[in-house]
Image (cartoon, rainbow, N blue to C red):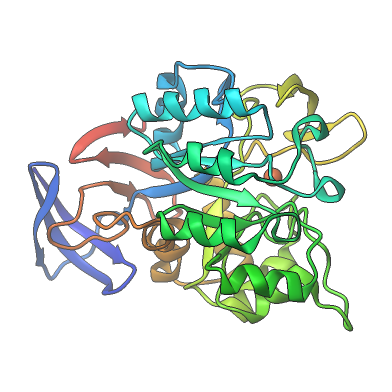
Amino acid sequence: MRLEGVLVVDPIDGEYVADVSIEGGKIAYIETVDRNPSALLLPGFIDIHTHGAVGVDFLESSDWKEVERFFSSNGVTTFFPTSVSTSFERMVEFLRKAERSGRFAHLEGPYIAVEKKGAQNAEYIRPATIDEVKELLNYEAFRTITMAPEVNSPDIIELLERRGVRVSLGHSNATYEETLKAYSAGARRITHFPNALRSLHHREVAITGAGFLHDFYLELITDGIHVSKEMVQLIYTIKGCDRIILITDSISATGLDDGEYELGGLRVFVKNGIAKLEDGTLAGSTLKFIDGVKNFRKFTKCDLKCLAKVSSYNAAVHMGLENKGRISKGYDADLLLLDFDLNVIEVYRNGLRIFQSS
Ligand code: FE
């Protein structure tokens, strides 16, 4: 198969017009051509933080087909089903489901800080124990975890990182010093920055200041609700294109009407697409990945190469997905054909078309 006369947007090589040939699910060769491009070609989006969509919650349900279809219509070709704080038994069950579906999973909690629980169920929040962590490490699907540095031992963070599980700091009230201990133990990401984190104070910059100052990847929800436009601009100005990872943090209500839903045993009310608990706490988003990408571009005026980094390449590098995130010979043919306003036209995964706009 061949995509002809497209504007290739590669996170490393940048933009150029080419014909792209796909064989055996991989990008076989790329030939530059001299003509006006008909569409943009970007690496498929990677969402490392999503709790579900279209009525499906990854923790509750085991049929993830419908969500997969919905995500592909938004340009997502790889996603990490994400849990919320729950019992150990249910975490194991969740990892088993992820394993069966051939996906990598993200455990968000329960090893977080109660003071920064956001929409996580306090009933399950607790520090990690070495026994639980060792047991979780038996599961291939276990690839990343959100935990608060101040309630967990740096030894546990070090063990997880050593065993290939990326530790993301989040739902945390950590001081700057506490954050640095986790950084030294190997943690290199912060979850939905700067939501559910101790705020930056000019005499105690806290985990938020550490996120700006040190070499962390920052997850960012660009729905215009969780983080203001100006904060996105500030993060972009300080961190640049190489350390931002766009996520949706979407919940089961995504793609559905306003109404009442559930997250981790808590009631969630969605009004005008904004998901909140009864007390007004934001409870995940109803963001479609493509809309987050459009917002990021609108807020920052970044170029397309940068957009390919924050929507795909950075997540691929951080999570060790070696064959993904680039449009280059030998990479997986996970590709998005977009028009020049960033609307999705066609989506390919392993060279197979999984979505086409009508
Ligand atoms: Fe969260």
